[in-house]
Image 1 (cartoon, one colour):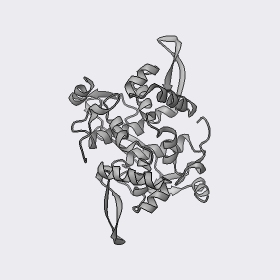
Image 2: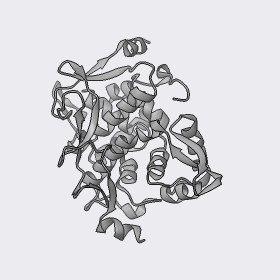
Image 3: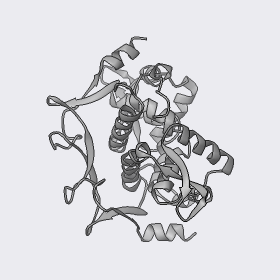
Image 4: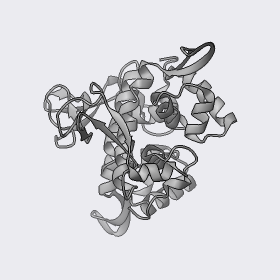
Length: 155
Length: 155
Protein backbone atom coordinates (compact mmCIF):
# COMPACT_ATOMS: atom_id res chain seq x y z
CA UNK A 1 0.00 0.00 0.00
CA UNK A 2 1.28 3.42 -0.92
CA UNK A 3 -0.03 5.42 2.02
CA UNK A 4 -2.06 4.13 4.96
CA UNK A 5 -5.76 4.68 4.42
CA UNK A 6 -7.49 7.02 6.84
CA UNK A 7 -10.72 5.24 7.74
CA UNK A 8 -11.73 8.11 9.99
CA UNK A 9 -12.03 10.34 6.92
CA UNK A 10 -14.86 8.27 5.46
CA UNK A 11 -18.20 10.06 5.45
CA UNK A 12 -20.27 7.16 6.80
CA UNK A 13 -19.53 3.80 8.36
CA UNK A 14 -15.80 3.06 8.80
CA UNK A 15 -15.68 0.05 6.53
CA UNK A 16 -13.17 -1.60 4.23
CA UNK A 17 -15.73 -1.62 1.42
CA UNK A 18 -16.04 2.15 1.55
CA UNK A 19 -12.27 2.47 1.78
CA UNK A 20 -11.83 0.27 -1.29
CA UNK A 21 -14.32 2.37 -3.23
CA UNK A 22 -12.38 5.52 -2.31
CA UNK A 23 -9.40 3.96 -4.10
CA UNK A 24 -11.02 2.11 -7.01
CA UNK A 25 -14.64 3.33 -7.00
CA UNK A 26 -14.17 6.32 -9.30
CA UNK A 27 -15.40 6.02 -12.83
CA UNK A 28 -12.92 4.14 -15.09
CA UNK A 29 -10.70 2.78 -12.30
CA UNK A 30 -11.95 -0.81 -12.32
CA UNK A 31 -12.15 -0.77 -16.11
CA UNK A 32 -8.48 0.25 -16.20
CA UNK A 33 -7.67 -2.75 -14.01
CA UNK A 34 -9.68 -4.95 -16.38
CA UNK A 35 -7.81 -3.68 -19.45
CA UNK A 36 -4.39 -4.16 -17.87
CA UNK A 37 -5.40 -7.66 -16.76
CA UNK A 38 -6.28 -8.39 -20.41
CA UNK A 39 -2.70 -7.55 -21.40
CA UNK A 40 -3.25 -3.94 -22.51
CA UNK A 41 -0.38 -2.03 -20.95
CA UNK A 42 -0.08 1.06 -23.18
CA UNK A 43 -1.98 4.28 -22.55
CA UNK A 44 -3.54 4.17 -26.02
CA UNK A 45 -4.72 0.57 -25.57
CA UNK A 46 -6.21 1.34 -22.17
CA UNK A 47 -7.94 4.43 -23.59
CA UNK A 48 -9.48 2.42 -26.42
CA UNK A 49 -10.57 -0.48 -24.22
CA UNK A 50 -12.15 1.65 -21.50
CA UNK A 51 -13.50 4.45 -23.69
CA UNK A 52 -12.28 6.94 -21.07
CA UNK A 53 -11.46 10.50 -22.15
CA UNK A 54 -7.67 10.84 -22.27
CA UNK A 55 -7.36 13.55 -19.61
CA UNK A 56 -9.59 11.67 -17.15
CA UNK A 57 -7.70 8.47 -17.91
CA UNK A 58 -4.33 10.11 -17.26
CA UNK A 59 -5.57 11.29 -13.86
CA UNK A 60 -6.93 7.83 -12.99
CA UNK A 61 -3.70 6.11 -13.99
CA UNK A 62 -1.69 8.48 -11.81
CA UNK A 63 -4.00 7.85 -8.87
CA UNK A 64 -3.85 4.07 -9.33
CA UNK A 65 -0.04 4.15 -9.44
CA UNK A 66 0.00 6.30 -6.29
CA UNK A 67 -2.37 3.87 -4.59
CA UNK A 68 -0.07 0.96 -5.44
CA UNK A 69 -2.62 -0.79 -7.68
CA UNK A 70 -0.58 -0.25 -10.87
CA UNK A 71 3.09 0.25 -11.54
CA UNK A 72 4.81 1.82 -14.50
CA UNK A 73 7.71 -0.09 -16.00
CA UNK A 74 9.34 -0.64 -19.37
CA UNK A 75 7.34 -2.57 -21.94
CA UNK A 76 9.14 -5.78 -22.83
CA UNK A 77 8.46 -5.29 -26.54
CA UNK A 78 9.79 -1.71 -26.59
CA UNK A 79 11.98 -1.17 -23.54
CA UNK A 80 12.40 2.52 -24.25
CA UNK A 81 8.73 3.06 -23.42
CA UNK A 82 6.86 2.48 -20.19
CA UNK A 83 3.51 0.79 -19.69
CA UNK A 84 1.16 0.04 -16.83
CA UNK A 85 1.19 -3.29 -15.01
CA UNK A 86 -0.82 -4.74 -12.14
CA UNK A 87 0.92 -4.96 -8.80
CA UNK A 88 0.04 -7.76 -6.38
CA UNK A 89 -2.62 -5.43 -4.98
CA UNK A 90 -3.98 -4.86 -8.48
CA UNK A 91 -4.15 -8.59 -9.20
CA UNK A 92 -6.01 -8.99 -5.93
CA UNK A 93 -8.84 -6.87 -7.40
CA UNK A 94 -9.62 -9.53 -9.99
CA UNK A 95 -12.14 -11.32 -7.72
CA UNK A 96 -14.10 -8.05 -7.52
CA UNK A 97 -14.09 -7.85 -11.33
CA UNK A 98 -15.12 -11.50 -11.54
CA UNK A 99 -18.05 -10.79 -9.22
CA UNK A 100 -19.16 -7.84 -11.38
CA UNK A 101 -18.74 -9.92 -14.55
CA UNK A 102 -20.98 -12.66 -13.19
CA UNK A 103 -23.52 -10.13 -12.01
CA UNK A 104 -23.63 -8.37 -15.38
CA UNK A 105 -23.92 -11.66 -17.21
CA UNK A 106 -26.71 -12.81 -14.95
CA UNK A 107 -28.76 -9.65 -14.54
CA UNK A 108 -28.06 -7.33 -17.46
CA UNK A 109 -27.46 -9.48 -20.52
CA UNK A 110 -30.02 -11.39 -22.53
CA UNK A 111 -27.09 -13.50 -23.56
CA UNK A 112 -23.75 -13.20 -21.73
CA UNK A 113 -21.33 -11.34 -24.04
CA UNK A 114 -18.21 -12.59 -22.25
CA UNK A 115 -17.80 -15.81 -20.29
CA UNK A 116 -14.85 -17.38 -18.55
CA UNK A 117 -13.92 -20.92 -19.44
CA UNK A 118 -11.42 -23.34 -18.06
CA UNK A 119 -10.90 -26.98 -18.96
CA UNK A 120 -14.05 -27.72 -20.95
CA UNK A 121 -16.66 -25.70 -19.10
CA UNK A 122 -17.75 -22.21 -18.16
CA UNK A 123 -16.61 -20.87 -14.84
CA UNK A 124 -19.52 -20.32 -12.50
CA UNK A 125 -17.59 -19.12 -9.50
CA UNK A 126 -18.83 -19.04 -5.95
CA UNK A 127 -17.23 -17.79 -2.78
CA UNK A 128 -15.99 -20.59 -0.60
CA UNK A 129 -14.32 -20.20 2.78
CA UNK A 130 -10.69 -21.32 2.56
CA UNK A 131 -10.78 -22.59 6.13
CA UNK A 132 -13.86 -24.82 6.19
CA UNK A 133 -14.68 -25.14 2.49
CA UNK A 134 -18.31 -24.05 2.90
CA UNK A 135 -19.91 -21.66 0.41
CA UNK A 136 -19.97 -18.29 2.15
CA UNK A 137 -23.44 -17.38 0.88
CA UNK A 138 -24.95 -20.51 2.42
CA UNK A 139 -23.33 -20.07 5.83
CA UNK A 140 -24.54 -17.94 8.68
CA UNK A 141 -21.97 -15.17 8.43
CA UNK A 142 -21.50 -12.51 11.07
CA UNK A 143 -19.86 -9.14 10.48
CA UNK A 144 -17.57 -8.43 13.40
CA UNK A 145 -15.96 -5.11 14.23
CA UNK A 146 -12.38 -5.68 15.30
CA UNK A 147 -10.78 -3.41 17.91
CA UNK A 148 -9.68 -1.20 15.00
CA UNK A 149 -13.28 -0.94 13.82
CA UNK A 150 -14.55 -0.16 17.28
CA UNK A 151 -11.94 2.54 17.72
CA UNK A 152 -12.93 4.09 14.43
CA UNK A 153 -16.67 3.82 14.89
CA UNK A 154 -16.42 5.45 18.29
CA UNK A 155 -15.51 8.72 16.67
CA UNK B 1 -33.93 -6.87 -14.70
CA UNK B 2 -35.92 -3.71 -15.18
CA UNK B 3 -34.91 -2.82 -18.74
CA UNK B 4 -32.52 -4.75 -20.99
CA UNK B 5 -29.06 -3.27 -20.88
CA UNK B 6 -27.73 -1.77 -24.11
CA UNK B 7 -24.17 -3.06 -24.37
CA UNK B 8 -23.68 -1.20 -27.62
CA UNK B 9 -23.99 2.09 -25.72
CA UNK B 10 -20.86 1.40 -23.67
CA UNK B 11 -17.95 3.70 -24.53
CA UNK B 12 -15.28 0.99 -24.72
CA UNK B 13 -15.22 -2.78 -24.76
CA UNK B 14 -18.69 -4.41 -24.69
CA UNK B 15 -18.30 -6.18 -21.41
CA UNK B 16 -20.53 -7.24 -18.52
CA UNK B 17 -18.13 -5.59 -16.04
CA UNK B 18 -18.61 -2.21 -17.71
CA UNK B 19 -22.34 -2.81 -17.88
CA UNK B 20 -22.46 -3.63 -14.17
CA UNK B 21 -20.55 -0.45 -13.35
CA UNK B 22 -23.05 1.58 -15.37
CA UNK B 23 -25.72 0.29 -12.97
CA UNK B 24 -23.88 0.15 -9.63
CA UNK B 25 -20.60 1.99 -10.28
CA UNK B 26 -21.79 5.46 -9.37
CA UNK B 27 -20.68 6.87 -6.07
CA UNK B 28 -22.82 5.59 -3.15
CA UNK B 29 -24.57 2.80 -5.05
CA UNK B 30 -22.61 -0.14 -3.65
CA UNK B 31 -22.58 1.47 -0.20
CA UNK B 32 -26.38 1.65 -0.38
CA UNK B 33 -26.46 -2.07 -1.14
CA UNK B 34 -24.13 -2.66 1.83
CA UNK B 35 -26.37 -0.67 4.20
CA UNK B 36 -29.53 -2.44 3.10
CA UNK B 37 -27.77 -5.81 3.46
CA UNK B 38 -26.92 -4.80 7.04
CA UNK B 39 -30.64 -4.40 7.76
CA UNK B 40 -30.89 -0.63 7.32
CA UNK B 41 -34.02 -0.15 5.27
CA UNK B 42 -35.07 3.43 6.06
CA UNK B 43 -33.86 6.44 4.13
CA UNK B 44 -32.45 8.07 7.27
CA UNK B 45 -30.54 4.93 8.24
CA UNK B 46 -29.09 4.56 4.75
CA UNK B 47 -28.10 8.24 4.72
CA UNK B 48 -26.30 7.90 8.06
CA UNK B 49 -24.53 4.67 7.16
CA UNK B 50 -23.30 5.80 3.75
CA UNK B 51 -22.67 9.45 4.56
CA UNK B 52 -24.28 10.37 1.21
CA UNK B 53 -25.87 13.81 0.82
CA UNK B 54 -29.65 13.37 0.96
CA UNK B 55 -30.41 14.65 -2.54
CA UNK B 56 -27.74 12.45 -4.14
CA UNK B 57 -28.95 9.51 -2.07
CA UNK B 58 -32.56 10.01 -3.17
CA UNK B 59 -31.43 9.95 -6.82
CA UNK B 60 -29.34 6.80 -6.29
CA UNK B 61 -32.18 4.99 -4.54
CA UNK B 62 -34.56 5.81 -7.38
CA UNK B 63 -32.02 4.53 -9.93
CA UNK B 64 -31.41 1.33 -7.98
CA UNK B 65 -35.15 0.66 -7.73
CA UNK B 66 -35.49 1.28 -11.48
CA UNK B 67 -32.60 -1.08 -12.17
CA UNK B 68 -34.28 -3.79 -10.11
CA UNK B 69 -31.53 -3.92 -7.47
CA UNK B 70 -33.77 -2.58 -4.68
CA UNK B 71 -37.48 -2.63 -4.10
CA UNK B 72 -39.62 -0.39 -1.94
CA UNK B 73 -42.12 -2.11 0.32
CA UNK B 74 -43.76 -1.56 3.69
CA UNK B 75 -41.51 -1.82 6.73
CA UNK B 76 -42.63 -4.72 8.91
CA UNK B 77 -42.22 -2.64 12.07
CA UNK B 78 -44.28 0.29 10.75
CA UNK B 79 -46.42 -0.92 7.85
CA UNK B 80 -47.61 2.58 7.04
CA UNK B 81 -44.09 3.48 5.89
CA UNK B 82 -42.01 2.06 3.07
CA UNK B 83 -38.37 1.05 3.14
CA UNK B 84 -35.78 -0.29 0.73
CA UNK B 85 -35.04 -4.00 0.40
CA UNK B 86 -32.65 -6.03 -1.73
CA UNK B 87 -34.17 -7.93 -4.61
CA UNK B 88 -32.63 -11.20 -5.74
CA UNK B 89 -30.44 -9.15 -8.09
CA UNK B 90 -29.38 -6.94 -5.17
CA UNK B 91 -28.48 -9.94 -3.03
CA UNK B 92 -26.43 -11.23 -5.93
CA UNK B 93 -24.18 -8.17 -5.56
CA UNK B 94 -22.99 -9.34 -2.15
CA UNK B 95 -20.05 -11.31 -3.62
CA UNK B 96 -18.80 -8.09 -5.21
CA UNK B 97 -19.02 -6.37 -1.81
CA UNK B 98 -17.26 -9.32 -0.19
CA UNK B 99 -14.44 -9.02 -2.72
CA UNK B 100 -14.06 -5.30 -1.98
CA UNK B 101 -14.19 -5.97 1.76
CA UNK B 102 -11.37 -8.48 1.52
CA UNK B 103 -9.35 -6.18 -0.70
CA UNK B 104 -9.76 -3.24 1.67
CA UNK B 105 -8.88 -5.37 4.66
CA UNK B 106 -5.81 -6.72 2.95
CA UNK B 107 -4.45 -3.63 1.20
CA UNK B 108 -5.74 -0.55 2.97
CA UNK B 109 -6.03 -1.36 6.66
CA UNK B 110 -3.20 -1.76 9.14
CA UNK B 111 -5.68 -3.84 11.03
CA UNK B 112 -8.94 -5.00 9.40
CA UNK B 113 -11.78 -2.90 10.87
CA UNK B 114 -14.50 -5.37 9.88
CA UNK B 115 -14.16 -9.10 9.41
CA UNK B 116 -16.65 -11.80 8.55
CA UNK B 117 -16.89 -14.80 10.83
CA UNK B 118 -18.80 -18.03 10.64
CA UNK B 119 -18.61 -21.03 12.91
CA UNK B 120 -15.47 -20.26 14.93
CA UNK B 121 -13.24 -18.67 12.30
CA UNK B 122 -12.84 -15.70 10.01
CA UNK B 123 -14.07 -16.06 6.47
CA UNK B 124 -11.22 -15.93 4.00
CA UNK B 125 -13.21 -16.45 0.85
CA UNK B 126 -11.86 -17.55 -2.47
CA UNK B 127 -13.55 -18.05 -5.81
CA UNK B 128 -14.12 -21.68 -6.62
CA UNK B 129 -15.68 -23.03 -9.79
CA UNK B 130 -19.01 -24.67 -9.01
CA UNK B 131 -18.54 -27.22 -11.76
CA UNK B 132 -15.07 -28.61 -11.06
CA UNK B 133 -14.34 -27.25 -7.57
CA UNK B 134 -10.99 -25.70 -8.53
CA UNK B 135 -10.02 -22.24 -7.28
CA UNK B 136 -10.57 -19.91 -10.23
CA UNK B 137 -7.40 -17.91 -9.57
CA UNK B 138 -5.24 -21.02 -9.80
CA UNK B 139 -6.78 -22.34 -13.03
CA UNK B 140 -5.89 -21.34 -16.56
CA UNK B 141 -8.97 -19.27 -17.34
CA UNK B 142 -9.86 -18.05 -20.78
CA UNK B 143 -12.17 -15.14 -21.54
CA UNK B 144 -14.44 -16.13 -24.37
CA UNK B 145 -16.64 -13.82 -26.41
CA UNK B 146 -19.98 -15.46 -27.02
CA UNK B 147 -21.91 -14.80 -30.25
CA UNK B 148 -23.53 -11.87 -28.41
CA UNK B 149 -20.11 -10.45 -27.58
CA UNK B 150 -18.86 -10.88 -31.13
CA UNK B 151 -21.93 -9.17 -32.49
CA UNK B 152 -21.41 -6.27 -30.13
CA UNK B 153 -17.67 -5.93 -30.62
CA UNK B 154 -18.18 -5.87 -34.37
CA UNK B 155 -19.64 -2.38 -34.15
